[in-house]
Image 1 (spheres, rainbow, N blue to C red):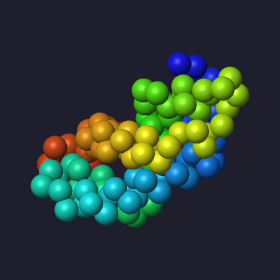
Image 2: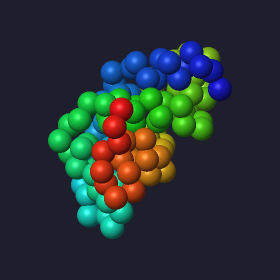
Image 3: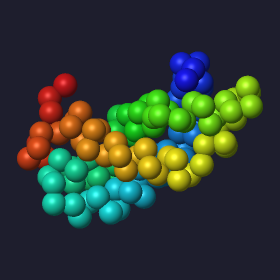
Image 4: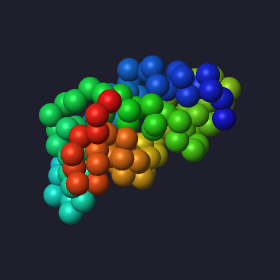
Length: 111
């Protein structure tokens, strides 16, 4: 793992766009979840709340295997990260991001 590559992924507009698109697409499903914090996160993503989107980009860029894929031949290329890799990371981190921003009852945490 290289922190430089994680930094590059985090700041790559294509990777960021792909991650935001994935999080938004997944929010369409999670908006109907039974957990209020997950629903609140999904609704925030559907409203386009930038802090939530940025959090997903940062966490997804640092997910296991992402940096290795993006730098697999010794040079950075975000397109080596598959959509399925991004999807798996976003799905796995939905509860993580929800806990950063919302109480279990869906109430927003104060900063």
